[in-house]
Image 1 (cartoon, one colour):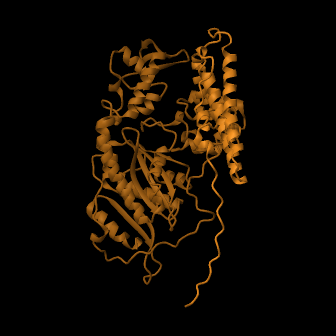
Image 2 (tube, rainbow, N blue to C red):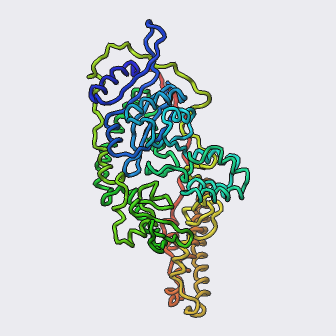
Image 3 (cartoon, helix red, strand yellow):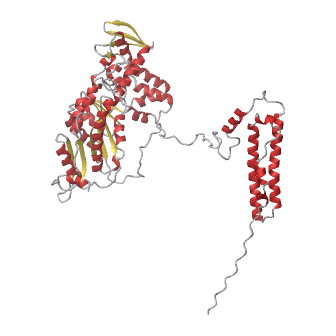
Length: 558
């Protein structure tokens, strides 16, 4: 039923948003058969206009498997807004992730945002199959980056270890070619065979030292696509129609939430993520020292490790951080403070509050209920043939070997026993007095040097006499009363329980009352002793055994 409503759904979206791009592709072998769903592409006008108005020319591409009954792949394209957050751009449900489907998706995207040859654009991907060749064919002048996390996952298979990991990420995050060559030399010193492994692809795909400076983005991963995939986890388990409707609703709610986000989170003219970078540059400038101004800028010493040249008019620094991001680095902040100027004035305009609001200025279309849609004259569409994937369906993403577990297990954790509040044992291995009782007794006890002689001996003797007085009357009462075996065993258990509890109570009472017992030669009378000697207990007799019932005689008939 949902696939039969796709034509009506596309017509409803197109009527509410005429500038949107809604495209459905179906296969129909013969005219006698109904068309079978193949692909569907959606890009709302709000996403197009918001991208052009306030986002940088950075596009992340990714594909996510659909988990419903009819398998497929969801291709997505996202960008970055003025606060370095994910901005959804377009998506399409296709039959699989191949070179053909990526070319078809990128051709539709090229028409919507006018990419051209891609000279000013930067694409970031996860090394998907067929995507590298598709970008090279459609956008020969565009910069293409691959996720460094996925590259490290392949690199680590034959080059594990913490030392190699640190050397790998130094090569990735090196900002200049000089730093990259030095990091690569260090990697070869640790393990010579690791150099050909990391250089299997050109470093312009994954190292900052070879990135272009026009995009004002220095990221080496594709996390913005992972954020989008995290928002649609539940939607991916639904049929295509319900999934696409959830994506539309998610974008609409997110647009409204971003407008409220400006008033709550923005600091002055920048978002919280950009403001954090500005504050970090200010803190780093405390370790820098301005040497002297020259003809081509200012010479700045970075904590005695390196020297860089800053040109404030061109907004450049030889460390290339300011060049790639558009945010002044710590060396630039040192020069700007020397000139007694505000470093916020030198931040690129693409990070401003105005650009952020321009990205979320346009509305995502709202539609009526499914019963109010206009029916199209298209033949009803049939769902694709269900494909059963090999193996058991997986609910979670398969983690790499180096990622580890996301939750903390109980193995290796020291448990705390709730009665004694000590760690490392349980009720079977617990031996000793609970610490709160022990600390209380120690606090109430008199120091050794202040106690008079003979007090401990008197207390011990009094406690022993009291315990003996408690046990004797009870045994005397139980012995005098003739009871059956059943009652005798019960009384014996009661005697043991009372003796143990009374001994513990009297023992703790004697330890905690050392100061008060000094003036009392004998222990106070025990209330349980008086209770046991009372006439009620002495005169208590066991119940008489029940007499067997007489057999019932049959009634005589009259």
